[in-house]
Each structure stands twice: as C-alpha cells, then as structure tokens.
Length: 168
Image (tube, rainbow, N blue to C red; front, side, top):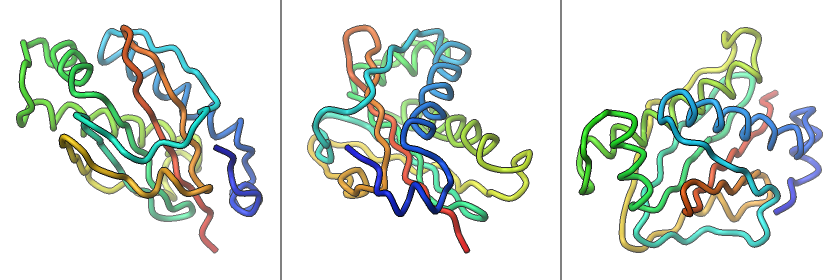
C-alpha cells in the first residue's frame, strides 16, 4: 500500500517515516506493556480491509494533524495480549479484552502524538473505540492515505494502521 503523494506532502513525512513511527511505537508498547516481541514486515504486500474473528482498537487524532491509528488483531492473539498485559487468564471476548486492546490503541496513539506534535500539545486524542466480530470491514485501511504495518507476534499477524493528514 502506497501513501498518497498529496498526503505525504501535507504532513511533511514520507511513507517510510510514518511507518517508522508506527513500528517504533508498536515495539515499545508491546515490549513494555505486553511483554511480547513484535517483528514488523513493512511494507504490507496486499491491502487488507476485511477481518475475520478479530478485534480492532482505534483512536482518533484532532488538531494540527487529524487521522486515526488502529490495531487489528486476531482474537486468539488478543486473548494472549490481554492475559499478558493484565496478568490474568483471558479466554473469551469480554470487557477485559476490549479494555486491553483499546488501551493499546491509546498508547500507540500517545506515542505517535508525541512525534507529530510539539510535546503533544497541539494534537488531541479521542477515547478508544473497539470493535470485534466474526466478519467485518474497516474501510479506512483500503484508502491510499493510510500506512499499514504488518507485525508478526508468536506466529500471528496483527496490523497497525495510521491515517494522517495535516490540518490547515
């Protein structure tokens, strides 16, 4: 997936720079909060917008930059992530799972916000939104203004996407 040249110009960041922000933030959050190592496989080979048996956490940006950061995770991996993060056995989709994935999206958003803004003061984050299901579509990931980075974690693939534009 290639970043739209107009989006790259409007943000003053290249696709590789934006991917680097996503990769650094994801590695940091997973190593410190989830105690799991992630390996990136950037760039994404095929666009993905449809998810099966997955959970998605999203946080919006507003201010100097607007957009969304999202994490898309198979439920099996999300259960392990939640168990590690909360120090409990999580074996079903429940409020703990939603809270953990929402908080990871929030931490990813916070990390990227620090990079994008002057100390985080000119970009605001929304509260996390979490969706899950047997089969759903996230349309923003099919747009060419989104950088999506695939990661491998314990044999599973998760995606972290960042849609971004600079406001006038």
